[in-house]
Image (cartoon, rainbow over all chains, first blue to last red; front, side, top):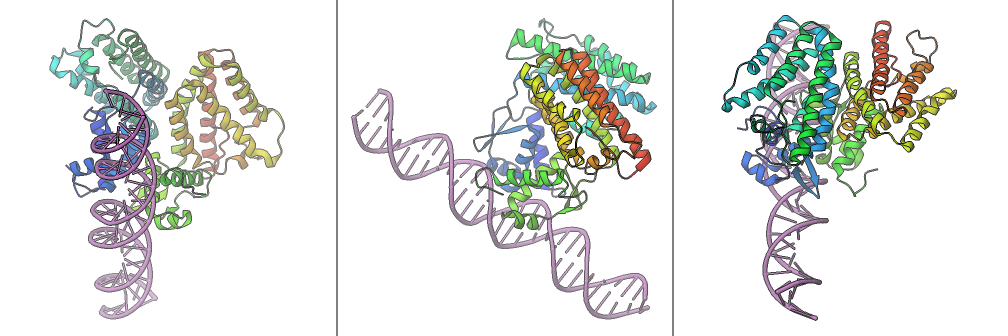
Length: 232
Length: 232
DNA sequence: CACCTGAATGCTGCATGCAGCATTCAGCAC
DNA sequence: GTGCTGAATGCTGCATGCAGCATTCAGGTG
């Protein structure tokens, strides 16, 4: 699991980051250096370094000497999506002026997952497609700092995201957006970028995030605790 | 300079960050742990931790085992301002809906520096006012993540920023924006926020950054190496 | 039984030892 | 003089020792 090639601290960092993002380490959970060091078969030093990095990203939090996985309130997630509103918009704008044929193909392929009906068990695949779709727009923008910021934002938000996919699949929930809503919003973004229209592209991207934020706040009123966040 | 109250690594981090941002440590300069440790009278450990943090923020860069202050190309700065285009816009939008009387007063006070003629020697004061003006809009937005991202972006860009103020004061340079241009753009932002108009506020904020980017790219053509960046 | 107090425990943050890697420089060969 | 080789140097990354702080738990007191 931990190889000797790259710096241990970076590997530990990635390991912990992934566990936090995927929910293996839950919000509020304490991160104890010696435990983690024992798990990963390294000394405390690279673990300590990794914790410093995670703190810098906001994924963990310093609470009275101890380190804990950050606990995000709904308000935090909404704030993060407001950031995404700005960043995604600019990314789509830039992407519209730099898109190439192969990149278009790639974007289209990510959208395919939303066209076909999907088995319950494959909802995570839908999620991955969604991630890839948005990420690829950032890549096409050619702006590495935009990529960085959006990744930080997405990572942080995903700390909150655990019960997302299950909820989206729940047709009972009045607050759930239909898969079709998301599909249409994605398609609008795709079409605008394909047409190389910056203004329309940015507007479509922002509209998408706008819907997510509205949905989050509506879900907040209904659920208060458990939230139905669909696409990001 | 280094007290015993807070964690040494955080103090070292701030010390180095400030030195990088203010140009005391120049782009490309190597950061040697033992040297810095000796300067700051601490051991290598907190210095090493601080370097890890700085790397996470992009201020320094890992180059073959050694750590060096990041060297930003003009392209990087332009990319950062595209980020700011998105972030500043959203911040202004949110600020417009949350502005209060005292915050308006504060914003206005920051603008005053641009109204009155300023001695050459006081150009740095102008710069500080500009920083405060934009920062305060972020604060008023009430979105801590927006604040975080904008700070990261500004810090990084300022690695590049050293010859800014001097250039702005050079009336010979055909690429320089007049102080009056900046003043008017700031005023437009202020007025829109004061009027609590989200759309107008965002548009004004974006327009401001748009001008900065245009100016950067124009300056690039003219100077290629040394750039006349005015307000951020 | 509740509360207060002090000792033991656990964990972090900093210092330092140690090994490995790259770079450099000196000396030698051509 | 130029180019190559090998040793010495310098620096990082990881492991571990050590001290301080907070938390906890046990035992005693009201």
